[in-house]
Image 1 (cartoon, rainbow, N blue to C red):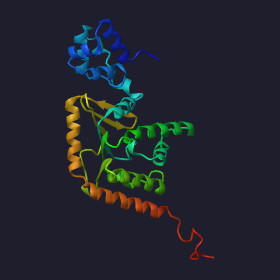
Image 2 (image 1 turned 30 degrees about the vertical axis):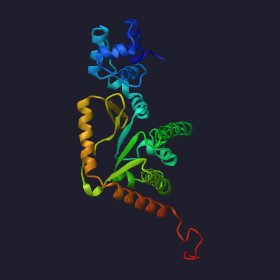
Image 3 (image 1 turned 120 degrees about the horizontal axis):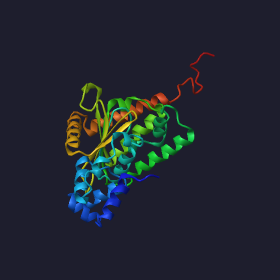
Image 4 (image 1 turned 90 degrees about the vertical axis):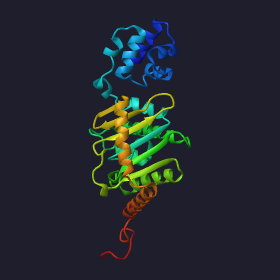
Length: 278
């Protein structure tokens, strides 16, 4: 495995005979943020890299070799996945399918089965396990606080078929009824809203600034620029203000799940009734 940016930063810090705390103080950052960068869990912003160069007297080396967008795309979700495990609050917006940490096994398997080109059964099994591992952040009854803002299209698209979809929607209802998550639906009747072109996640932490993660087809990016995160937060808040309240959102989830269950049941004739042609 090659040297990562975090490895490089650690080498420069140790060469300067600085502890993580001493470097953090000199660069006006937190020790935890330095630790996350060295461990590969965070990529510093351009401003962070500039301050690190100044603190370590490395000219513009750390700024010049800051990983760019192309370097991050190959495994674009990995840094977001690691941040997800550290967050104390997560706000999700979903435009097409249920967010990963809220997916059931059947739904996750169906979503991963839509990959193109198709993946092998072994690979899909591995990906499903990874996705279910992510969902364990909900095992703690309190942290992280999770808000799920769902476009109505997420409810209506029956990924995996009616039975799988009903199970998934009922899972969301149970999580919300126990108070573990908040769920709000942006109904079709609303028309357009500021989040129509993206799926995104906002994350807050105890000891570092918030970040936003946006994703599209073969693209994903973690944003930690305060101005960008604030703009995304404003868009999220605006959309949330136009969403259905919790009670109405849960009623729509339940009704959609019942409709899926109804369509998943065999008809009278399929059960061997007498209504069919002899």
